[in-house]
Length: 467
Image (cartoon, rainbow, N blue to C red; front, side, top):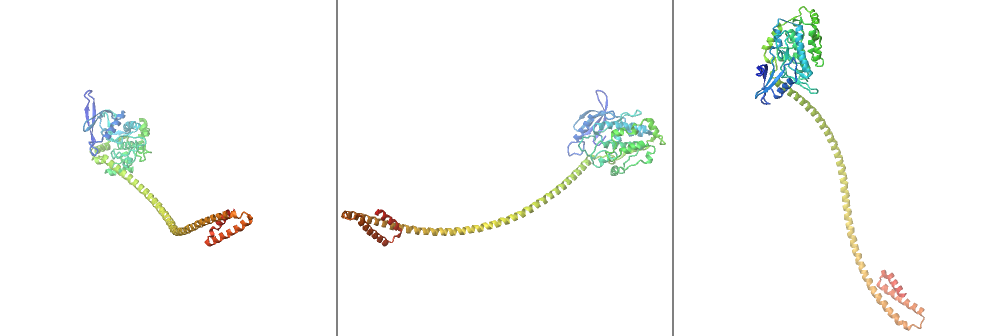
């Protein structure tokens, strides 16, 4: 049983076969902290449906009611591995490796499918039947298991403090290697009855894990082979890249050596039997220990708080970067503003100067316009005077023309009257003298009228008349 799950034995009516019914309490709302979320239940079911292996508990069926999801699982009635071993007076390394080998086989199957258990601990290593010499191991409880996807970063705070890897404690990206650390801790406890990192408080335990603070105390490992210690040492490595993989663990000499070789190895120690007294004390302590130092009762809430803190840190980092970028943008804008302001001032001075020149030119043009207007008025007045004089002269000319016309007519009449009387006279001499007298008379007439302007015209008329 767990915080939100209870396991009961049940029997299928149609066949009479017994199973284990795991009742998982459903979370009724997102805001609630009680129960398991739908997503987590579906993830556990999905993983159980993908796996089928002799060392892993099998899923038979699924039911659901209003409050619970019920997983019908293979019945594993042999109890916990550590309880079984604690009841024995002694344990040889050969027996220990057989059990460890079964654990490795089950984990190897999971890892081949990119599934990490994330909660490997003695309570989740069960025996199918304890009434046989080498009972069959079953790995149970896949409530924290996850499928590890390439390129997808997964972080969480969960598991049991004693057995969690440093990357879980440090909230770093997780992978299959976390299970290998847990196997190292389980092996350490199995061979010594002591927990390598367990402290007086949960905080001390986690500090020991992150510092990889453990040793092989001679009191506990005096009868343990070097190969077994080497196996543990290569699993309890903080750097996940240097930690043994499942395949490397299965190939380790401590696991692969034949019994005869192991006997020769164990001859180097005085007693090949590992006393189980301390293991018995450990299991009693674990069953009676208070949950706060044995498991994360509120691991989900703690994980969410850590995730929120991480998000806040990322947010602050982003905000700081944005602040720096904004400051740079503001400095750039200020620089551009100052340049533009200087340019505008310079342009403004230039425009003001040009405007001043234009105003001066405008006033100059206005002055010229006024002078021109006055000149036009003066010219207009002069033209009016000239026009009056011209009209007056034209009137005088017309009068003179009429007078001359009358005089010419009179002379023509006179000429006609004298024509008859002068027939006997010489035409040339008489005409010449007569014409001379006429011309003199006309000139005298013109002088009296003082119209010099018409002299040329009158001369022309006289000439034409003469002709």
